[in-house]
Every structure is written in C-alpha cells, then in structure tokens.
Length: 153
Image 1 (cartoon, rainbow, N blue to C red):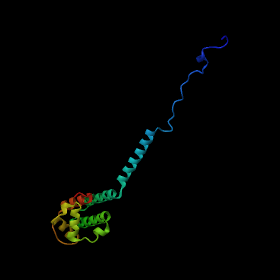
Image 2 (cartoon, rainbow, N blue to C red):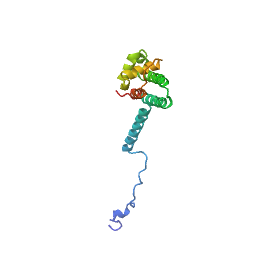
Image 3 (tube, rainbow, N blue to C red):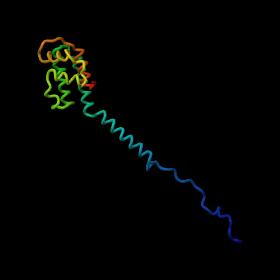
Image 4 (tube, rainbow, N blue to C red):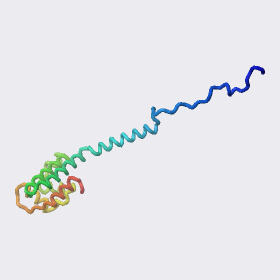
C-alpha cells in the first residue's frame, strides 16, 4: 500500500454553508396570512360602504342639519316629513311605503323604530307638515326621526 493514502477525508472538498434562503417564494403561512388580510380588508370596505349604511349616514347628517338650521316649527315639520318619506322609500322600497298615509304612515314609522312619534306627537307632526294647527313637539319629532333612521325598534 505504498502510494495510496488512507486519509480519504482530506481528499474531499472543503465544507461550506448553503446560501441563505431568499424571501421569495413565500412560505405557505405567509400566503395564508396575505389571503386572510385581503378577505378582511374587502369585508371592512364592503361593510363601510354598503348602501344601507351609507343611506343611514346621509339621512342622519341631513336630520342634524335640519335640527340646527330650522327654527320654524312648520318648516321643520315639512322637511322632517319629507326626509322620513325619502328615507323610507329608499330603505324599504316604494311598494311598501308609497301607499301609506296618515295614521298608517305614523304606525309604520313607529313600528320601524320611531317610537317617540307614537300618539299625539306623530299626529301633530303630520298636521303641521300639511298646513294644520297643532302643538309642536320638536324634541319628540327629532328623537322619533333619529330612532326611525337608525332602525331602533
């Protein structure tokens, strides 16, 4: 065994570390996290912009504007009645709301959350809005309208 070396390990290539892992492609856990983030973002955007929420926000903004700008009870009653009608038609549909008038209209508003308009305050709102004489109850009108728009039954 004269010319053969028995030290086989010394004949191997020197040891070296593998290259560091790159950031791409992403690991499965990161993909799952990205998908979850995307779904949650889409749900949040939809929730904030869905038509009934946007409609409610617009109606509440207009109600607040009426409350702060109108001092005349007759003008307030007319504009409030008009706002409630427009909101109800947009929210519940023309077929449901268009045929309602008088006591049936007030009963619908009360049933959908405007309990402050139950009884005389709702009847007085309609009387004043359509040119009659009655006692004005601004607080009950505005409270009932706000509850109706917010949908609190």
